[in-house]
Structure formats: C-alpha cells, structure tokens
Image 1 (tube, helix red, strand yellow):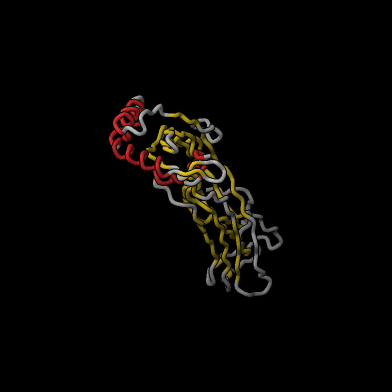
Image 2 (cartoon, one colour):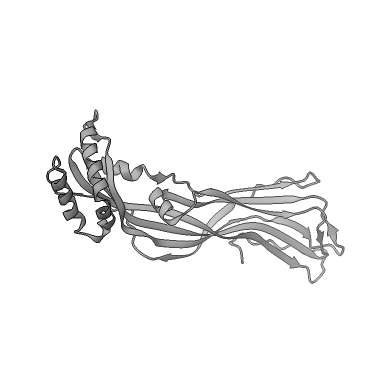
Length: 281
C-alpha cells in the first residue's frame, strides 16, 4: 500500500492526444463553413528497449538494529548503504536520515485500515535513470483542404473573402513527475496550426489551389527505475519500481500547398481532387 501510494502520488495527469479541426469563412454565396476531419498518423518508429511499465515493485527490508540506540542504528544503515553505489548520497546524509527515522518512529500512528501513517521518506534516488524505450515520428493533418477553383477560367480571380482552417494537437509530457523533473520536460499543452486563404489573394487562370495545415511531432516513451527508503513503524525498507511517461516534442507545424494547372485550357475539364492522405512534405 505505501509503495503504491508513493509512486502514484507523483504522477503528472495523463492527457490523451487531442485532435481538433475547424474552418471559418466570411459570408458569401455558396461558401458554407467547413468542418474537416483530422488524422494522427505514424510516419516511422524505433524500438530501443523493452517496456518496463508492467514490472512490479520490489521491497527490501534493511536489517537495522538498535532503533533505540542511535549509534548502533546508524551503523546498521551504513552497512546497508555501502552495499550498493546507488546509495552513496544516503551515506553522505546518514545523520539526517537517522534523526528523521527516529523522530518518525515516535510520531507514527496506525490508521483505521491498519496502515502506519504518516510514512517518512529518508532516502530516494534512481536505480536506473530515465531513458527512451520507444519513439515515433507522427503527423496530424486535415484530410480536407481550403480550395480555390479557377481551373476552367481563362481570367485570374481575386478572392473576396477569407477562409481559415485550424488543427490542434496536445504535445508535451504526461506520466511520472519524477521523470518530468529529472529531464526538465513541460506539462502537456495544446499546439495549433492555422492555414488561411485571405481576401485579396489572386488565383491564376486555369488553376486550382488547395491549402491545409499539419503538425509533425516526435512521440517518446520514457522509463526509469526509482527507489524510496521508507521508515515507518520501526521498519526501514527500500521500495523500488518502474516509473514511465510519454513526451511529445514538436518537430514542425506548417501549411501544405497543392496546385494543378489545366494545361489543355479546357472549359469542360474536371477539376482535380487534392489527396486525403498524409502531407507530401
């Protein structure tokens, strides 16, 4: 129970990837507002190491002696800390750890469910520092376009209205606060990309245009193994387990431009349709 609470109490809330899209156009004949769909797609991926997300916690009880005798208690802890280099910081803080443990022993009380509270952390650190287990390059894009069709006309056209399309994605970090703080990641936040065809733009003769927004980012799965040294009720134990998180890093956000020319200059030609697949950028 204690270990579970310790690890779960320092989690950054996980936000699901949010995809939104909208188009707004000025009032005009036959120019209704559009609501395009957007897609989030994997472009490439690399697996670096197996996931440890489902790996369980371990508990190691430190064989302390003489809780009521400070020198003997300190020696017991030092014997344990010198058994592994990862506890080197605890060795340098041994006096503080001993004092905290003794104070917590006298202050701890049993809760209604039998758990000793409050628990006191007298040491903590990384057994295995955070590392990337998996990464993907991804792209979020609108499947529709802002079109301007002058494909069957022999004179240029000036746009008399403005149309705008926006897509959004949630980037940043979600998961263990320990990894976030260690790596300096930012909490998840929305990122937008807006594409417009503005009033006054000129569409050449025999031409069809299209614009749509896209957002490219890298998704990284992070993992690490963290430990706490807990002193509760006279028992000193090491609680160790995996911590994980996901970081989404913006690569670029921009507008894809598509155009086709009616080289035959045919007034009965069919206007080409822009692609609905991923951006060709």
